[in-house]
Length: 156
Image 1 (cartoon, helix red, strand yellow):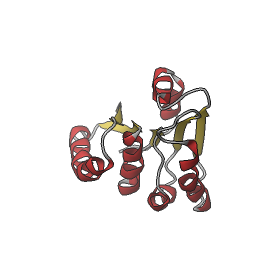
Image 2 (spheres, helix red, strand yellow):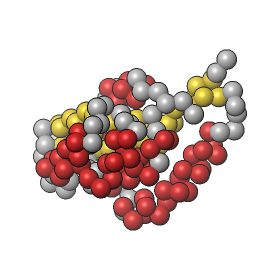
Image 3 (cartoon, helix red, strand yellow):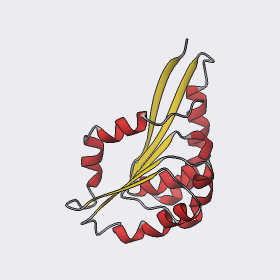
């Protein structure tokens, strides 16, 4: 009998440099926290907003085997990060704000197009046209993202 645990790692707004420096530590702490019981199965879901969205792309590219699904919010991924994500076909639901002047919608397309070019098949991109950089308030405040996470399983 398995007991299932779910973990959502949220990278709150912090610098990209900080995300890069902390990535190995976050990986180690996450695995230490959840690998304590052979009877327990768990799923890791990664999400973050703004710079945390950039960190989400970065972590998924460096440790693609870790995550059942990712949801970067108002943070686009650079095309150079996409190959490991595509190779592992990590489910992605990416969000932008149509009125976001901080991270404009047009910056998302190079990375998303690269994923499609690499054959990634499990990708959703939602723009909340009436929202700005605070799109995360609606996304995290709604049940849809959490239900979507639970549709994606990658057991550890």
